[in-house]
Length: 270
Ligand code: PEP
Ligand code: MN
Image 1 (cartoon, rainbow, N blue to C red):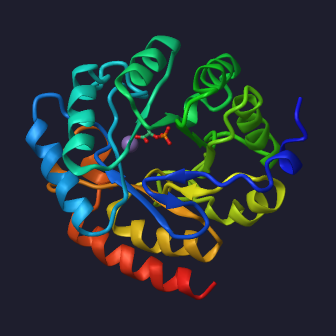
Image 2: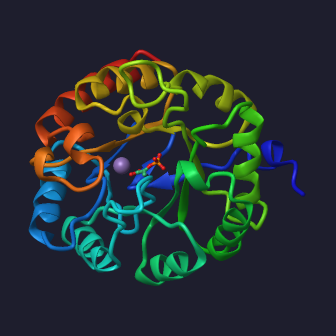
C-alpha cells in the first residue's frame, strides 16, 4: 500500500474546470432526475449554470430507506448526460453496485458518488478503485452516516486511490443520530481534521446534513469557514414537485445564487 498522504500531497483534483483549493466548487442539481420530466432537469441545469454552479448532480439509481419509495431508473442517465452536453458542465451520479458502475462509466459520468450507506462497502470501493484507474473520473465519497473516527473515512478513500486514481473528494454529509430539528448531525466541522490528515479535497453536502432547505445556506457558509473546497447542494426550480429528497431539501436556483455570493465572500477571507 502507498503512504497515501505523502505520495499524493501535491496532487490536485480538477473538476468542473475548477482546481480544488484554488476556487470554490459548487455542484448543484436534483436529488433524483425524474425520467418522466427531462425538461425540468434541463431548465434547472441552465438556471444553476446561470448562478455560477460549475457541475451538476442528479440521482439515477437511488438508495432509498423505504423499499416502496421510488428506486430510480436508468432512463434518467440519458437525461443527466444530455444536460451535461447542453450546459457543458460535468455531472455527478451515485452508483451502488458493479452493474451501475459499468453503465455510468460507459455513459461518461464524470463524478461517481459513493453514498453514505455504501461508504463502508469495501468490495464496491475496491471495484470503483479498479475501474476508475487510468481515467479522469472523480469519486465523491460521502461520509458514512454512522462513521465514527475520521480514520474510518480516510481508510475508505484509500481503498479507492490505492488502485491508482487519486481523484477522490471527501464529502461530509451529516451523521446519525441527528441533531434535533435537523435530518442528521451536521459534520462540516470535521473539514480541518480531514485537511490535516489527508491529501484529499473536501466538498461538504449541507442538503443531507441539515435536511431542510431553510438551513442549507448557513450550513454552507459554515462549511466554507471550516475550510471546505466546495459544496454539493440539492437544488430544483420547483422543489415541491421534485422526486426523492427535493421537496424538503432542495433550494431554488435563486437561493443558490445568493448562497454562492455569500460563500465566496467567506472564501475570500482565507
Ligand atoms: C444523495 O446524494 O441524494 C444521497 C442519497 O446522499 P447520501 O448518500 O449522503 O444520503
Ligand atoms: Mn438526496
